[in-house]
Image (spheres, helix red, strand yellow):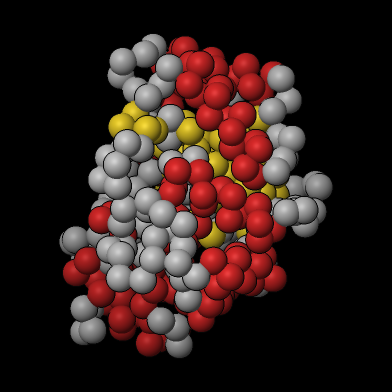
Length: 317
């Protein structure tokens, strides 16, 4: 597909609400984003992690993400509903429920519709429900990618993230393993997760980096430099836990006020804020509710004014 985006975008300053012209590659156009220059997706995806674990399990950062869903049929139906609603990027990982999350995605969506992109991650060992241990041994990364290919029922993974950089192994070896998979035709694009600007730069010297997936939302903005760096270079930025709002969620706060002005929910408004924050922002909210899924997708149609954006951004977390 041909991308018709303009050659420059404005990146909003989250402190002042002003905008800085940033020369960026042709990667975004309206509600679409090109990942790696050749994968067009809508700018709100779906994070499948929440589909792991049964009723009553903790959510958010405390979720164990350890077992397959208790109601498998409902989870399958929700994934299919996501695609029907226009979502064309599904995010999962080999560590979510020890691979069962990937199997669930395949059960729901394989054979995949044209244009549906599945992103997964390798590089974390799960030896218990509360343990997430980085493991960057190149042979392990390649093995896990091979298992992901089987579980997802694909010949090539559209987007493979290194789940975490393991300090025990040279980054060159870790990215090199993914680059080898790419050269073999088993991986289309490579991404990183929970990284700094310097790590992105270092990894980019080894292989092209198409996306970065870091924790980022209105209440947690530790990765502002990464957001700006990725926008400047046309790298997709996939914030996980994008709707955590902290103090912004107060019923008398600016987020709620702007939501009322837009005729939207606070969650939708938080997603709209993210989309305005960067032209390469691609939130991947997760949910187990079909109603919330539809609400999240509809957030892409909201347009914040500069004043509304700045009013929300000005509230400290």
